[in-house]
Length: 203
Image (cartoon, rainbow, N blue to C red; front, side, top):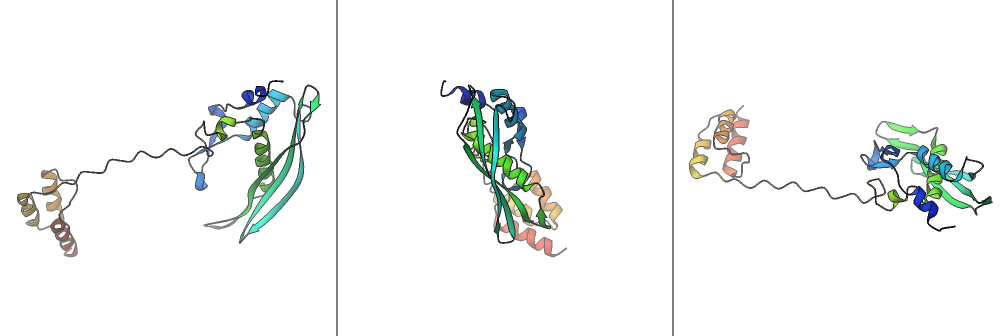
């Protein structure tokens, strides 16, 4: 058996198998759809229970202040050439009670999600979704690229003539009109800022 055979079969994740994370600190990033993992395992090893299977070792929860997290430990098995593998371990977790801005949110699917997470950990050992975990795909596991920094606007200084014309304005609208006439988008003179502040106070 070639060592990399199954790894290569399982590593690539198609775009349609990715989903965008809609909330939390990973909002905007992408994750792998759990059903795709099951499809790839079935495609590669056979029907669940015959070509691959798993057993739940234990389920438990842990409290962190007012929040409660649920955990699952599983063992995954695959069948190759009529021989079952040694157990491939996986531990996953999910929130049971999460404190949100509107109060406590209780999930009735926490253990199911923890088991799904544990399966993804175990399947990762076989190469399932390897390109995602190795950072070759833009997902929650990849290093976020640095955002291109917007160029800083150049400082625009008013000439003395422009400054005096602006200071003679008696209301904010006229100040804006003068600045627009001189094509001044940013105000860098303290005198203008002070003048605008005084006009605002006079309203």
